[in-house]
Length: 480
Image 1 (cartoon, rainbow, N blue to C red):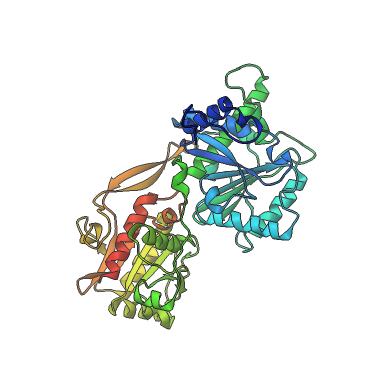
Image 2: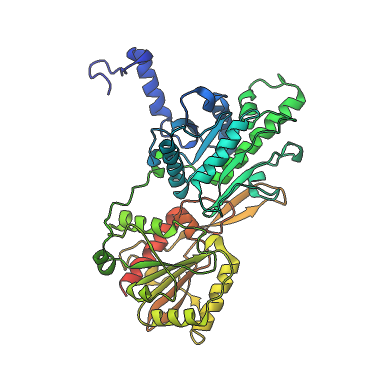
């Protein structure tokens, strides 16, 4: 705190003992501290290999600011001491280097992998790049990814030329394209890696080229070098546009409370009984969606919730112990006759099915509608009216007369991607049984938004409105 008499700040250690320096730094922080953080550079080792190009991120941030019309900041984060909540203040983490990024201790390695996995599960984006030839970094980072994602379906794969990361913001001349590896996790590519150039044809890394950028000194480099720098900056802003959807919030927005409720059978039976439906229609594409919804219920409406969502199949007899089934998917599917019969009984006995198409998947939506038509041939899905009480505060939720929905668009085959935001009432379909909505279905995405995964490709509701819509549906179902 400042000195009460002089108004100066005084720190400890190094130059901050000088009140003039400490006060200058404090005022600088107060003026810029609430700027949205664009990305953070990850410090993962004691030596300076993690920061071979000290000005790279600063120059990339400076490049982005005028193009997005935002005042932005960046920072360095020591992953060894930072908590998951600390990391979540940064929508993008950048890990660079030439040496093996893995800690030597097995315990520290597992802690690092677990921390990064938790960050990615909560909507974060990890961006890695090998500097120079970087063979040690390459080998170590690939092994780290396998520790973060032990599941075989999550592996580094080459991103195709049509991946939106190549044109999310600016077009890049194909001659400056370089291999990008990625891991599809959740609703998007959540981890990307730029491997080193082959030893036989070495070249500069992106961060090296960012470091060279001199926007206020045009003409100091040969034209060929300047073109490489500009291409590297374009690739950088493309990655950031894809990772953040250009929607940057103050740091505190990214803080997420850990669930603190106790999981007991009495709690599940007596207060909140929601199960996630396991089915063959791509139900694992957004694995944390229901957990995020439960956390939102706890935070927004103070509803006690179980700590871990339960997954069930339709043929599980425990199905009838639950009020609400949460279903989502991203691919076509078909239910068996036994599954259709069980779902029919569940709904007839007072249960509710709450479903949404991940990223607005047309394949899932078509399959869902077909299955509902087979289960209820005399009661087809109908549009839930904009003025239905479910979208009001009648059940303790939110007034949802108008919500925001993203509509991804492109300015051409190679043009900038953007997500237009449409305003209007929630677009839901449903089936009524005895005067209540027994089936509530959104053909637009809720799950990716609940997971905090911003994707330029996702047809669906914005983060905040997705949570409010889902909360209203749950509160409605619990009071029927």
